[in-house]
View 1 (tube, rainbow, N blue to C red):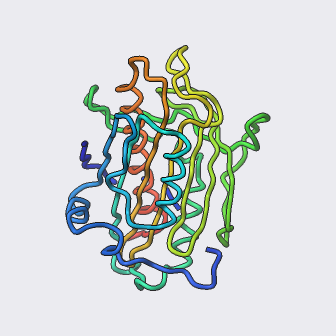
View 2: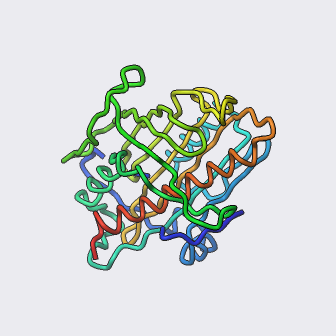
Length: 266
């Protein structure tokens, strides 16, 4: 397991009440002590990997279990991050501030701001750019660039397509589905195009799935992300898992920055 100390990761009710959840009901005391010191990025490279850091949330469990049953993954990466709100922005453990949630949702839809984000490369002992380009597009066939959407009220469901170029898998199209529930906002990413490592296809269309949950805990925001794939390893298992870990690391840093500088301004 890699426990990465990073500056900081997705995401994201159209219901009559918006609820916060006490963190004690989501993670164990040991997990919380770990998160007080650092975010966690944990890689599982094995047959039939099982999540180790997933918060106790029924809807999250259903989405993750469904993805596991569909993909039968051989690589899984988890990320767990606890963002402590400034005291001025604390909310009741029974009511999630709607303004905060809408702001967070809009930041998670700001796909273009992923352009240029960096991750720390352990092998190179330096920061590297992860996404060279990231843009919303009108669809996987036409691929015309679109502005990032901004909402005054969070929709029940939302689907976006994005064209993103990263250093490992090149230029690809992804589908992003946003789902709102009483307790959390979920973000599900799936690759539309086949991912290549060089000229070698390593992850088929629809075989990379990422699920992100954002849960308000009153005085903090708990973010959990899990990415999984059924990949044709062919000796590239370590490189693929490393890229997925880098992706989680970069997204966590990006999301922390969006919270700090656009939502919970100190």
